[in-house]
Amino acid sequence: MIILAATPIGNLGDASRRLVEALENASVVAAEDTRTTQRLLAALKIDNRPRLIALHDHNEKERAGELVELAREQDLLVLSDAGMPTVSDPGYGLVAAAAAAGVVVTVLPGPSAVITALAVSGLPTDRFAFEGFPRRKSGDRRRAFAELAAEPRTLVFFESPSRLAATLEDLAATFGADRRAAVCRELTKLHEEVRRGPLSDLAAWAAEGVRGEIAIVVEGASAREVAFPDAVTQVLELVRGGTRLKEAAGEVASLTGHSSRELYQAALAVKN
Image (cartoon, rainbow, N blue to C red; front, side, top):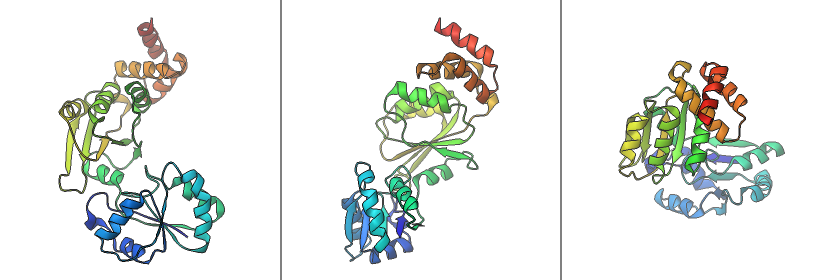
């Protein structure tokens, strides 16, 4: 079978007993970075030295079939550098191939930066969506955020510290300056920090420079929270992304409750 195993996202003490036992007994490990896995084995004082096979974004498509066949004969332990494999990490392609081939896949649950950030954010946790890393370019980010601005579920993003301030500025511009959010930094580590507040305040704070592993949690929208000017901005962002004006107005209207006709006319006036 294939065994997906969650590894600590920062604090080594979060390694589960089942993870330690799996590492002690594994004969083959597919790892996002074999060097990281070697350091984990050493840190956990595990003497076992399994065969390590690199499985990352650049080779997963080519290696998935080979690893699935290997898992027919012996257990294959799958690790990412931190957290749960397949969640913004390699492993999805392998699991999909295994499911199609009828190979059993199981999980050793454990740390997840997504769930950890959501839990400490102070924002609603009953419904949420994970959006991974935002686009690198501001224009692309804003177009993507415009499509999410009326999403009622809490949203979770990952971001690099070098782009955090710009991303928060783009979120404030498209979601609204007052939308509540939390920036979770260095979760489970010595310098863990959770900064909560309106997006505009968080963007100003991040402009001074932030370090570490970052997760952003943003409050979902309700129809009454999307002001008409913000809805028009969403329409225009969709149009810039290639959506026809009429279709963009209809899409935003369905999400916000504003009139499609009024959105269309307002956006057309801005364009002209």
